[in-house]
Amino acid sequence: MIALGSIALIVSKVRAGSIETKLDRNDTHTRALLNEYLFADIDTDDVNTHRAEFIRRLQPYLVQLENGLEIVNVSRNNPRKRSLKRVMLQLTTEVIGETLVRLTHAFHYFGFVDETNKSLQDDRWWIRAKGSKNAGLMMNESSLPYLEKCLDDQNDDVRTEAAQAMLDIAGVEILGPILMRLKEMTPWMQVRLSRSILAFGENSVPHLVTAMQSKYPKIQGFSVEMLGILGDIKATPTLLEYIDYSVRDVKHKSLIALGRIGDERSIPVIQRFLFSEDEQLRVDAAKAAGNLSTPSMAYDLYWMLVKDTLKVKFAAAEALARSGKLGIKSLTYAVTLDDAEVRMIAMQFLHEAGLPVDTSTIDEDNV
Image (cartoon, rainbow, N blue to C red; front, side):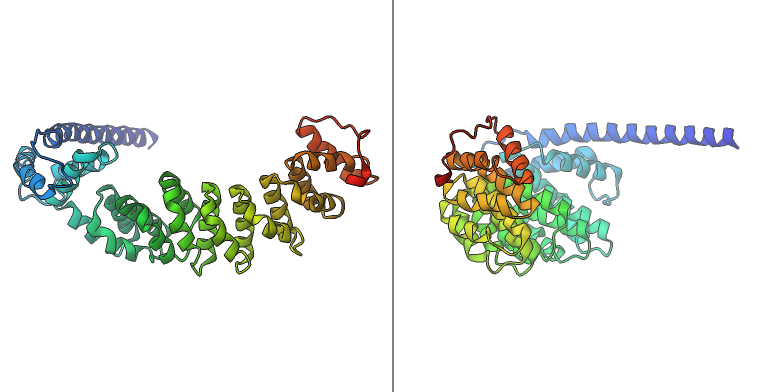
């Protein structure tokens, strides 16, 4: 039985290898013919200005590609047609400009766009997810209404692929509507969308500010977090406006974002949160104060180091180490106190700042 099983496994691998080799050969042939279409010399003015004329001149080359692959009037399951679709999808991330226009038009010509739009309405979630991904690769604007519906899908993968596809097709201008439509975001969706947002850069800011109006805390929190990472001061007024009306998690992310942005207009709000009854919000406010590197909050941070919980003490000491001369002086004085815990924390951050502990020059009246 073991021998028969081994033979069966070998036969299976051989068959799989032969199929893969056949697919590779088909794809190589397909790519060669497709390249003739993509790089055919067409004398025309700017494609975007005279798009209709450009498309008209492409037609003979599309017919030539269709005849060369012998896929006239064949079903979509024909191996050569599947090979064409596969190769075209692989190429979308490799071409730009006029070549991408040619490729996008070919998706329409061969019926792949209609096929994809139909898959977005399929009962099977994995078909909808794959269709969403393909719609994005095809830069298929006609898919946008179907993709928008997929944002409400019960399956996480479908929603993720649909949101990413919409950004790929329509760009940053659709970011706000996407976020306002979503009710939930998985960690993977946040990773995927954050890559696009970072690529859009400061152009994302007004759309993220709009998304802060979402009634769903997950969407608010994601938008706030991305605004902090982008670090654009144009987001400061909205962050300050919403911070008192937000749920705890959004307050937490808002304080971190304000610290990262470093706008002095946020100092009064951050200072107020240093006295919050919520321990974590005090920690967040202390870290934000440290990121601003301002001496104006050094006094409050010093007393947090002396009197607050262990978690807050560490955050306050770290903030003091980044608050200029007054912050360093406060840490140096803390080393002289009777509280062993405070002394150790202060010494740790002075050491990490590369500073010697010298208490001989301290003027206690100015601390």
